[in-house]
Length: 487
Ligand code: ASP
Ligand code: MG
Image (cartoon, rainbow, N blue to C red; front, side, top):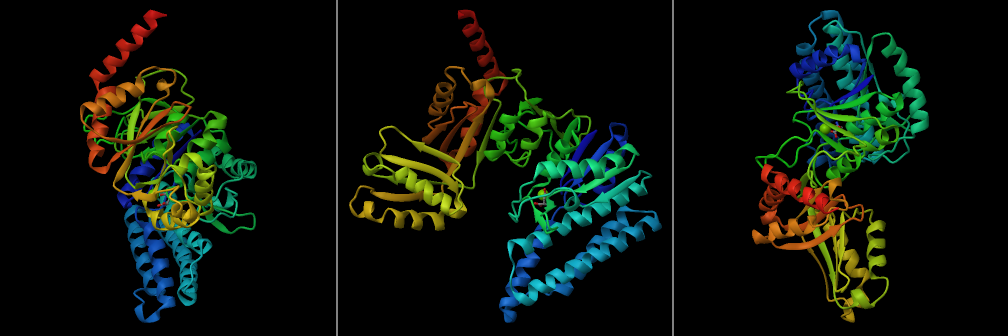
């Protein structure tokens, strides 16, 4: 059994729904279960419309949207897709009837939002879920139209989550039982279940979402629950690459990486898969493949426990641009105990993620990398927290720099391999790229550094050239051989 995930771009229009349906049908022997996102743009449209309606409810004079008109337009567009994707008139009108019913419920929800001028995370989840709920109807109908047995299923029935709206987390025991009870009989009888990505529900049946781009995570939850043989994440690129090809033109596809490497890559800006995707798969050791819908014969990147060494020490290099650097500087950072604890305490209280920390043992300053968008909250909060230290000049300044990028070189081969950091920094030094701060976790899977935003592309290309181009790999190999030779 293979759980196959298709994202919004893969089902971007009627023709794409048909292609996905053909692709699924071609794997019938492998007993596929589909997990599908909303059609490209739907989730954004739903969220933006709900926000505009809430805004208009608070300030009717400035209202730019109207629930009834918005939902009518949405229905028109969805019906156009259905009409183009499904040829058989009976199947088409069945799907249309279900989808029309869904739009009525959506209209009631959005009218409530409009009248109340209020939009809670819970309401946002209820609204956003319609993208996926409609999408599975279209795909299941398209599959039937092509002669396959298929059934649309909402993951509200399957994935039990906590009540953290917009970032809900699954309860795997109940979810596993439900997935098995509901999906296995279908698969056994040759039906392709088409399950909504992105969503789940609480114990009392309230709709939740797993967070933006959560369909990858859904596929892994369903795959682990069913003990699937493999989980395939269909994308529009040839799997995980050594770097972003827009930044590094000679980037290559990777054949195999470990769960840990995939985790590091996704946390550092490589938008390959949702960062939580590997979690459910790890426990059962289910391999995840990242495949290309435009190039189905490409075997894909395999993500698994991956103990075996396949490539050089660095497998990929990635950058994250939406980050800013916060620096707390001054003599007191070393001499006054508890500065770091207080700073991180404040970050936690603000619910701000800290992506990277750097603090040299001379201790004159403490650097943290956070998302740019939280800077307006974080800086005043920190300045308030350290008001006294700032007055006493124990802390000289608390500042932020948004003109930076974080770069991460990732690869499990770095563990215990001497000289990787040296090579990396020398290569950057030769190009006169200034390194603002450095961090390496003790897992040694990743070396992270901060450079000026202007140096992003050159830094990526330099690291790629050093470790991942053919000449770079050659250097690594001959180095490894001489190390082995010494033993
Ligand atoms: N449709 C959702 C989103 O756009 C989930 C996903 O695409 O994975 O965030
Ligand atoms: Mg998406």
